[in-house]
Image 1 (cartoon, rainbow, N blue to C red):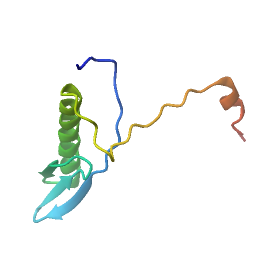
Image 2: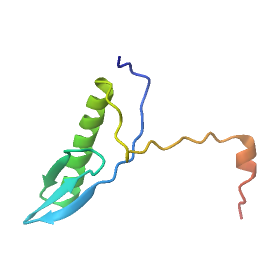
Image 3: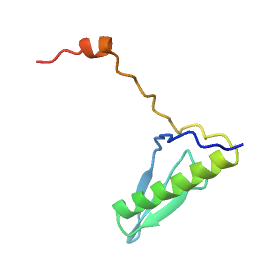
Length: 88
């Protein structure tokens, strides 16, 4: 069952290619996710929106997150990790 626990961050590779006078964008890790735009930026925005909808649907329905989608680990900054940084 789906329950909200706060935001989840994902990193997804988006490939953008020229397609006539437009640009085609797709995500290899998200099967079937293809979109386009008049500019590279628009194609990227459309791919981002589509990826968000895809992942929301996967989570809502209890489907696994596809391999190739990474969730970056959050590193807690502790006093010892801050002390180990060399600042000049």
